[in-house]
Image (cartoon, rainbow, N blue to C red; front, side, top):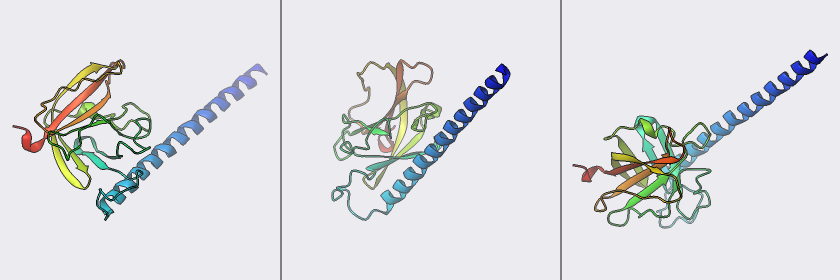
Length: 190
């Protein structure tokens, strides 16, 4: 009798885990499909970006071919600009319209459905990163990376005389640290 109860509990547990895993797979697929639909809409949009009032449309697309990342991000004002949902466009960024711009994007790494920067550690110095921002394409070259303690403060080390793209994610080996990837516009890399 005890063996039957134990077997039923094990079967129920396996069934629940299977359902949860199935839900996670479906949810991950839905997130990927929505991103693809938003990217298509981004490139097909006819309005100029100054005329856009919809904060539910992508501001730009981050494309890193070396790690097969092609993901949009929203404006700083968008309710969808949220690290728990998407790539996060930090408010400390200096827009590309300004001299010596600094676009800062952050995302999670790991195995969850929102771990968009999971493979950044596979990038090598010299890797090319594309950023389509407000309909204009920009190319960056990864120049260096460094680790920093996750303590609520962030120090960005960069050449302030160059346009830069900063990518931030958790460190793969130390959960108390984050890795900062610093890239400069292709034209400014010597």
